[in-house]
Length: 160
Ligand code: FES
Image (tube, rainbow, N blue to C red; front, side, top):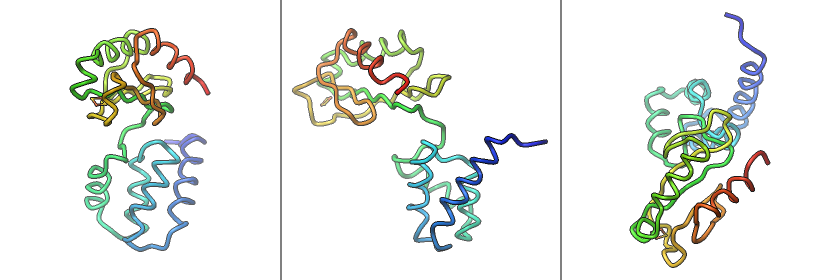
């Protein structure tokens, strides 16, 4: 089957990232970090190419990719919304925020919008309980989030 030009371009980028590093196991994490940064997740093909580059079994590469929370094996949105679901945020209405995200964007925690703009995740207490409920948008902190504020946050982060 003919591959499209996007796949070819992606493979070239993967290859150039991987080939920046000598073919040694100690560079696996650094390669993965660069791939995650570039693609916002770790495409399976990139992991296979990494495995070949450093001459390491795919099972080892895969277990590293799943061990570290910073890596994702599924595509994430350009903007990752993280709602805190610790006790204080829960009491102050984080579930309302999660429901509101669903109303606005149609995604539940762990999901990404079909246009690849937003993903939603929940996280444990961020240590900022005084400003609960807390929401992060690509690691920018939004305090005391209400449904109205959430709409503003989503608009502010949409299509940048
Ligand atoms: S419970 Fe959300 S910041 Fe502590």
